[in-house]
Amino acid sequence: MKTSRSLSLILALLLLFLPAFAEAPFVVTDMLEREVTLKGPARRVVVLQPGDAEILYAIGAQDVLIGRGEYVNYPQEVLSVPSVQSGYEINFEQIIALNPDVVIMTKMGQKVEDQQKLLDAGIQTFMTDAQTVEDVYEAVALLGQLTGKTENAEEVVASMKAGFDALSEKAAGKSGVTVYFEASPLEFGLWTTGKNTFMDDIAGILNLDNIFADVEGWNSVSEEQVLSRDPDIIVTTTMYFGEGPTPVEEIMARANWGQVKAVKNNKVFNADADAITRPGPRLVDAAEALYSFVYGE
Image (cartoon, rainbow, N blue to C red; front, top):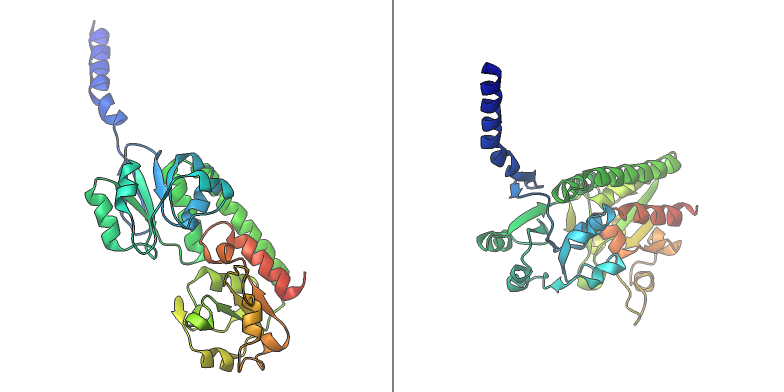
């Protein structure tokens, strides 16, 4: 009799607390240390920046995408996802109309006010901030958690690490080559990538010396600084749209640049702008292409 009453009490308690367990919130901490609370893994996602979108595809979470920023263009199938205005001015009405669980944004790409407007509209935001290669690994892992693709995310990170390790091993002992990353051409004011950036990390992986390793982050530099530091390799991320000189031809023809070692030796490389400037899995592809250009292997 006592046993029967005990079992009944246990069952009653389980029934009492079961709804609480079933409705336990799903919480993921984003890269700005904000707790993002959902009912479960995100199932309706708008992603505003290309790097984050590429990560979602790499981890097999593309089915959750219901909207993309206007510059999200890889892989090709993402173009079938409805786009929203996401440049300097975000179209909040377009995003709200899609009724997402969460909007994935970046610290560099969006303003704090943009995030707050969505929160005020009852839409959760998830912030990424991948500045270095290690940050990219973290972004992959967190987006895996957010979408319930943790194991896939772990596999993507492991694959990236293996790719970088292989390049590092091949580049071992090949030191002394200097590189200048040109993120913005002379016409628009020179910008480069210094320390604490994934492009500087790629230089280190390939045993190259970034001539602006003393500069913090993505920053402007002067023409005189570039000429005085005289790089062996110039990497331009300028895109070519089929008219006028190519980015390489433009650099080779610059006044006063003729004595720069990279120009004299025809060592100017037009990198795949999307692959080398987006914090995602294709950074390995960008590093492999640069390795081949520098070392001829």
